[in-house]
Length: 378
Image 1 (cartoon, rainbow, N blue to C red):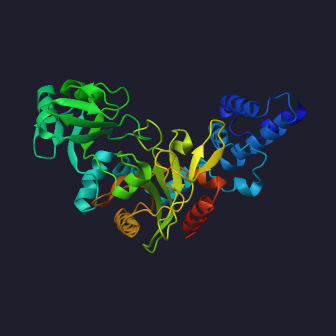
Image 2: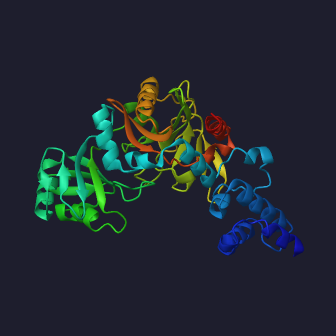
Image 3: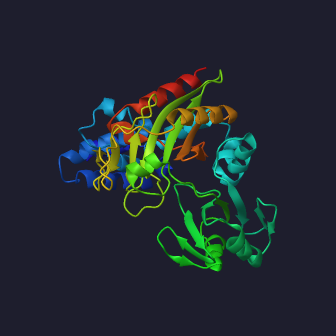
């Protein structure tokens, strides 16, 4: 008991200690029950990760950091969200966050810069008239119904302007005045309108072009729904942009959004060789949290490992050009789709999440820490 008290005494912030302690104890008990000999070792590691590296109990569980097979060197490949946000906040002016985090602003800004983004059809605001890029104002339900039924193309996407992690994104097709979502559910114009007007989380939406996969991506995945790359860039004080990390998201099962969410979504993420655009084995998360490699696509039988992404050189050029134009923001997580007409920037994220999935394989994040750490010393 004295040993446990000594370990717990190292937790910071007494006011927050109680709730974090309960969560950490649950994680440690789940990994190694408290009545076993491994519990004390798990608790000691958990407290050290929380105190020294800023990992939350949720992150410790998600990345299975209590696994004794992970050496100290292995643990250094992971970074906590808290530590990463601290680095990002020193590199990126916080006042610029709306440019990337508000999609309505981001798309209009990037269109003005002449960069490839999905075409915007309209912007919806719950408490003020909407705006249609063909010049019309959408002031009431009648205006919106007419716009949805007559002015939109046969396929479109509705996404929250301030959404994160793929939440509440709708993929729609329309034939005559009947709408269908990606699961085949039937909608009328009023139903589509209500998905925005009655959304419990968001009050503003972007209605935009629905992108198509490049034929090579379709061949690999057998899925027409767009699947994107996450590419992380860092621009130094001399104005030189470097791509640090790249991963290609692969949809799995009935998922319609390719968000990876550290493997919790069920989708896959394959690392990209930054020089050649070649994919490594995709990463998948098991129910117990352990990461395993997937080398062949389960639906198409195509090899993921060794697959060469089309348009990789064009993609690199697009992202590096965009990163320079986004200064003074110096590090961004880009979501890029490969389409028949070329690479298209789907989103930019100033507060990108740690790609800790690679902590089990390559030391990508060691490179990220090194690059950002060097920048902070300039």
